[in-house]
Length: 318
Length: 319
Image (tube, rainbow over all chains, first blue to last red; front, side, top):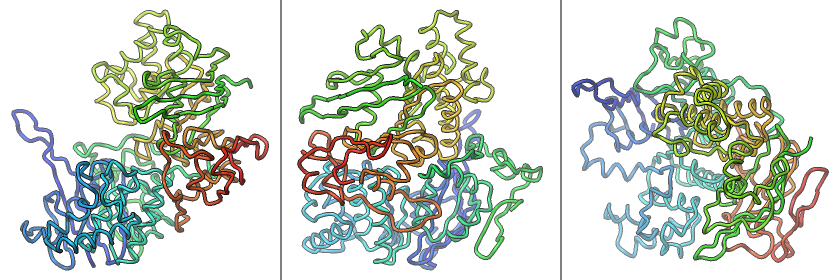
């Protein structure tokens, strides 16, 4: 396993209560476990506020987890000192959603892509230039474009620049946090294909974070569905899409609008809002919106269990 | 049924330092009462500027509607004076936006904002206007509408705020509702609820809806007809069934092939390149530089809209 995450938790202090006493914590991640194999993609899917981005950032230790362990290439990196972390970050990188705010507008894009090489003191000036050129070509940009500034590129091209920067140090794992959500459909396909081609060429692993189930199905080998800080279903992509077992996964799948009017029908849509992670419902967090909820769901927390080989569900009824 | 909204030859330009940007060019279409017309396109195709032109909300200067007419129930909105137009907004034609947090006033309760709108348009007492606000919140399926009317926008979730904005837009029973990416900022499960609501309301109230979106899934879910915009122009128009089953313009064909679909994992088809800047359009068909089937004619002569089958128009030399 390239990455193993075990019982990861992150609690943020909640809004302070009476007389400055800290009130309830925000349980952003509440006991999340998963693993990613070399060369594979785990899709992490869920709605806003479910904790999926916090998971991504915790793995890189951009956010310090409250508890749990993260093992990368067999080494526990949870308590690693910052000096060691720096070496580690050559092996794991992140690509963010918004290519407009993740690139410094005042720097030439060639320098942006070369910066990781400079920071890690990897190559001489001329080597850096050659490497950057190669990176530009690999992500489908022309090396002549190295001299330009971010505003001279379209959203899709900027995301290519972010990907080139992430690739600069030859990482094994890339956390891709909604990498195509800000892009137009026609450009989205270009970036998805690029990420998938790079995976084949470089044996990259991805933690692919997205709210879009169709995109997640497309790129992932395995899928984990999150709801309010927990993984409610976790399986191989084919298993989970052929036979979604958690009522939340099922609801997400019906809610995704499909570009196919012949499949339009009176659907049963999920009612209610996503509850806040400060005030989580007791028992199964999903029960207030669940069409199948029973008494047990209102009081007793469902633990994840394996219902068929490799298919985990946290639901009393599945 | 006679159309309630008839747009003809609408053109909007922006005079900028970088030159004249032709945001909307020669748009014509009509919508019947209770019908839902989707206007689809990628960012920068002019769809939002088209919507704002219908409402006469184009920031001017630098923007200007330079040609065309926008008739709602026979009256051309473009000929009205500012006072009459202000009256028409809300009672004849109303609009909802992508981000309700920026469209609602954060300092006023939701109920107050809706009743203010009613009081401005109709000669009713304050009490009756407040009652109407509660009624409208109930109508958009907000639970406990009376309590919610006393809340401020920040106390509501994104989905709830979008419902409140729909309630405000529909409070004076406009004949036409323009919805500009109304569900783009929402989570999928909430998006599904809001789309259901818009679909129900147009049927109940007979409101004609123009839905601006980039999401073909959303279109397939709720629209009756669709217009595809590219670089400020309509390039294809037709019924949803025809357009999805047999798209005629290579742009729509490309768009449909580039969307990942659940249950159909295969390599996505890309459309090469990006949308051209509206200030610097190629001489012929604006899509030609990205088009896999472009021929020489496409590069120097702009194709007109032609019927490719009954009720299905496309502007393309090769299809």
